[in-house]
Length: 212
Image (cartoon, rainbow, N blue to C red; front, side):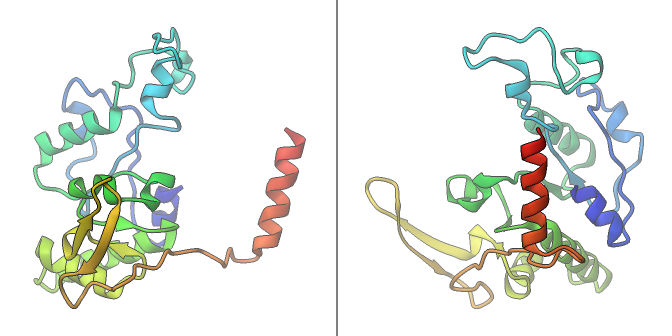
């Protein structure tokens, strides 16, 4: 979906499905991306695809051609990102998402930036800011993160906040450590779906579920 959103915004997107993670060849077939990589493990998490709830190895992968096992590695996102770093160095990588991103603090040490809320609009804004700062010759990672936090609603940059924890590990306090970071990061919600209202979308989803 995100790749189609970017295409609709005028960007060119190459989709590399289940690359051979054992070598660099597949990762090089489109050349070095101008902007970066968006990485996912697939339609379903690779560990769920490979193992049952009893941690027994499945015989087939329902989300691979012909149900063939072994086309994806365990913990595919980690493996793919390691291969990208190995080949392209410090190129931007976008990963993650889903409900866990609504509570990013447990993994905040591993990410530069989080989109809080629905990312379809936000990602396009982030990409355009990245291009703008590159073209103007004022891009550095730190400068970009500060500018994104300042100008794009829903962007949470962990390094721009000081967080205190209670003894039980819950958050005691959280405050920005620079003027660019908002005191409260507001979740992005897309309310306009073109010709469809939220009620229309709900009715369509209800019908699809009932038909199933």
